[in-house]
Length: 238
Image (cartoon, rainbow, N blue to C red; front, top):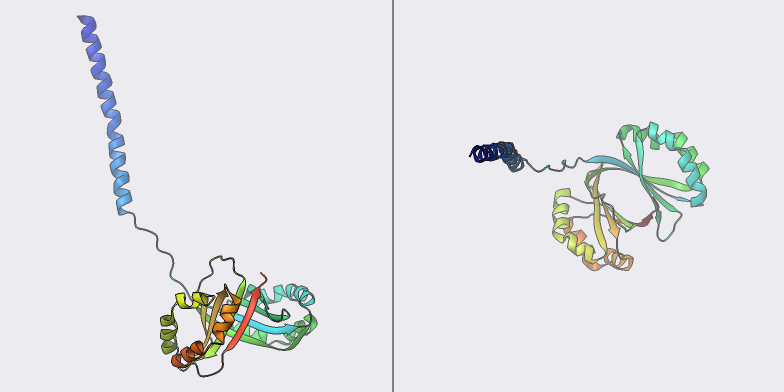
């Protein structure tokens, strides 16, 4: 009889210990559930417009131009310019376009107009005066994609907001069907009605046909484009 009582006491002790050990687990589960329920999803940071400088020019020989350009990198960085990319023309690969992010647009303007830069360009074999543009980027898709071909379209419009409405109504799907993927949108720093649109090109033939089509010319007229567009096809080299 004593043995049975001892066994029952031991069994009850084990049961009590087991129940006590389970209590914190229940509380922890409850706490975890509450934490999960109250946690808010992290929102991506809002896009902040930024300024860039683009430089377009022709060179005698890209392979001779490149090392001189690379050697001048410290001077560009000292003036707040960070390279974004280099492109070569699809129809003439000695036509170069280089884009830089600018920390200080006035310093960038002073540098691009300096005699030292002019001397460096001459040394690198640049032929003719460069086309230098100062832009404020207001839309930017810099996600990684396989396509390296690009199209930059620049034109002047009567009213940016009116132009943007027509552009957005055209829609990404229509542009994609014509071999063009939206990558960026910018306005001129000095003239905000000068618009720059950047596309990745998935089909060169379709993209060129679109840029020469009567449909696009009418669309531009409807959007208030008041001058001939500058159209530049190029391939990213880095």
